[in-house]
Length: 407
Length: 227
Image 1: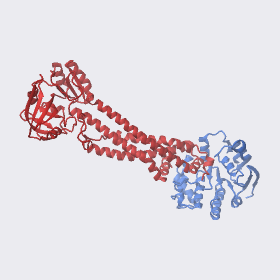
Image 2 (image 1 turned 30 degrees about the vertical axis):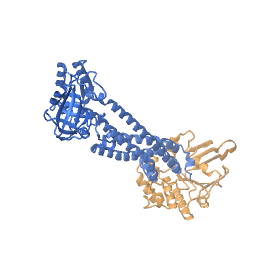
Image 3 (image 1 turned 180 degrees about the vertical axis):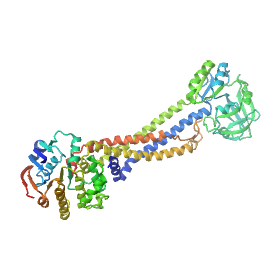
Image 4 (image 1 turned 135 degrees about the vertical axis):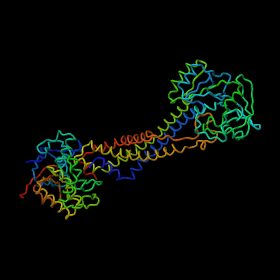
């Protein structure tokens, strides 16, 4: 007869009490897994959105480029040095030139200030993924085809694919320039910082608008995002002080830090739940110890040592943690796995005013990984065992002669 | 040959004005194969004395020797080991573990004594105490008499030197009490197991080969019967 079997059977004696005491652990583990899954998914979404939207793995842009707001100056543009060009050609997986400029789109008396994204139709997709784009119409490649308007902007201007729009921008020398262009298509990128604030303009048309062939940004894709830091330093060294480098991390670190705070807040909340649960478990085991005083005395009289009595009650507590933790993990892990396949559209919850300045997808996938699921289970076992220490000590220290005759 | 020897054993509870002398300066020796009963009125110190003999409690003064070995200096582990291997207990309220079957209750005693092969021995012993076919029943599926038989099997399975029975018939009707007592006497005679009882029951006294009478914690008489 093993200690484990005895502990397991003892737990089944007071099923209802054990279930109620363990409920907080189940909720805590479930909540922790789902919460961390969402936070992990959101972190990945933030980084992916930056990589696929406006930053790539890293971005080279003119020095002292505005860090905030909606000003996209084109008065200072980039001229790649031969060294920088060699470095990009040799080590980057892909790179592309972009002209980011301020533009006002007008139609039927309505005007909207937008971010113009001048792109190279051939090279741009290899740096800025279009995998999740939804396009109504076509993605223009020539000036004649016109522009690709983001769906949010189109909605505000009440435009659709096939309509025309007047784009007004300043040339790189500061003169005002305007062109009436057709709308080749409408795009939903799912990046909230783009979808209501931008218009994609093919490179040829951008050059007509800002009157320069030089790019304002160079987007770079590397084999792995972590290479951005080292490569960025070398690119900057090759390009010189006229430029600055923005990595995906620079672009997302503030949001990721907020996420970290959110994660800590979640952990604190779960810690409170676990504390409540540990009190419930301690109470349950203590009640069990008192109710089973005679049994404990009998076991001690039969030759069970204090240490084994202690181990018996710790095992009972640990088993409660295992059971509750596993149930929470099945529910939470199942939920996280479901969310990893079936994203939630945050826009449904937050409405239209959400995150125009935030680069992350409104479609939020949960992150599913074994550590996310198993760590809370381990935590729940540790909490339950720790909670059992006091009652287990009470049980092990009973006076045998009194305990065997307890009523 | 002495299984257990008490040398000037006293047990005092409380202190000062509330001091209670449960056992006073008791010296006696329990010999191999004896069927001894501690008798006396309530509060005379029978149970306290059994606790000392069974190493469930430590004396305030004096010494308890089990098979010639002093127990005063033994720690929890050593006392537990001594109880596990040398002493079997039978309690008034049977004290079976409710989540275990009859045979598991018996096996547990063997396992605590560090012996293997428990299942078969447990079933054999349960058969021997008249519980054929009841090995897989839990205590709540057994009558009081049957539970006490399981407790007897549990006490005997590890072949202890001494079995201590605290009022073993007190919770049984007279028929069951008689049957249980006959069984213990038979095991005493057949296997040579030494039994030590505390009791009020005249029936137990009738079977006992030695009667130690206690009063206010002192031995007032110690009579051996001819068998």
